[in-house]
Length: 295
Image (tube, rainbow, N blue to C red; front, side, top):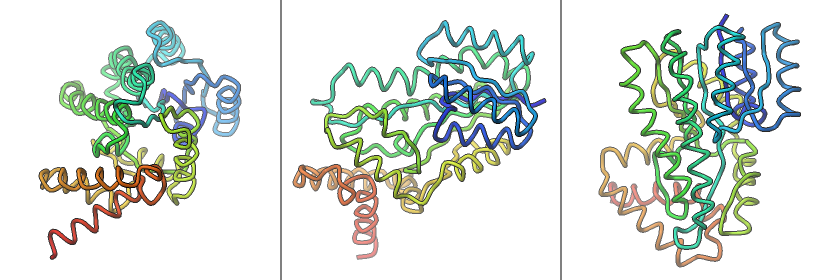
């Protein structure tokens, strides 16, 4: 029996991952704060696939709740083969206007929640030579202005994963970090921002993309078991191009990001619109690349 714990599994990417792993014969622990939905999902998966799928309420910021869940899993399953730190929240805002309370909120959930999960679950993964999958974001690799809290939390997730990749390799544990961009999800519902329209616009951007949570889940399933570290499922060619540009031509990348910030400032009233939001940034950056490199 293969056993997996997925946080934030009652909706969005977490739900898609739960369904994917259950369909592949895994027993799944649905860990979430959404009890009603989580119980229904676990029951449905158990009935459909005949595996031991169960729900457990988990606030990933609580050390005590993590310890309790690991104790339950150790007794029920006698081990764990995979942990997916998926639960997270969205945040956007300028550094001088976004509240420190909300900054701490984003980092505490997105980064420290995963750190706590790794702390208590890694001993089980060492025993099984299992999989550790941390869900970050393209914002963990590309850091745009106006998103400091989210950038910091997701970049921290990437750094955590890179460090654990080497730390856990001698124990046979494979570590992957997932860095998707916009895909169809409900992440915007929990968003905190200094712009009252940010959540609505983010929701439209998520809904408009043709990338589904199910497609990302399928990529995660295949790539993680192959031992792939960076999983960029759901990213477009433009995202990958800019990430490579940052890695190989960092000065040019930073110059472009500064240029984009000036454009955003000049058009402040629509800085969260699709024309000047993340999708617009990538389009402008690609035009900038062509102009600078191709003349």
